[in-house]
Image: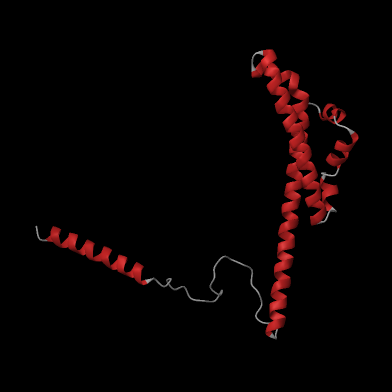
Length: 169
C-alpha cells in the first residue's frame, strides 16, 4: 500500500472519522450494538471504494490495452479500498470478541435462572471440556445400536470364514 498520509489525504473528513473510530482504543469503549452499527458503516464504505476501484480499473483496461498497464493509474482508488478493508477486519474482530463475551454472559444468566427455578444452587458448573461425561466418570464404550451390532458381527463372521478357508488348504 502507498504512504498512509497520501491515502488519508485522499479521503474526506467523514471517511477519516470512520477510520479513526476503528482504532484499538476507540473500539475498546464501544458496546456490541455500537460495534454492529460501525461494522455496517465500514462495510458500506469498503464496498463503495472497492466498487469504484473495479469500475475504474475496468474502464482503464480498454484505454491501456492491458490490466497491468492500467493498474498504476488506479493505485489511489485501490489504496482507499485497502484502508477500508483493514478497518473492516479490525471492527469484525472486535465485534466477534464482543459477541463471544455477550454469549458467555447470556449462558451464565440462563444457567443461574435454571438453578434458581430448580430450587437450589445445584452442582458447580465445570469448564466445558467437550466431554459429555462428568469429570469423575469411568471411561466406558458408547452403546452401539442394533444395526451397528449386526454389522460388526457380520464382519467378524466373514473374517472367521476367510481364515477357516485359508487354514483348510
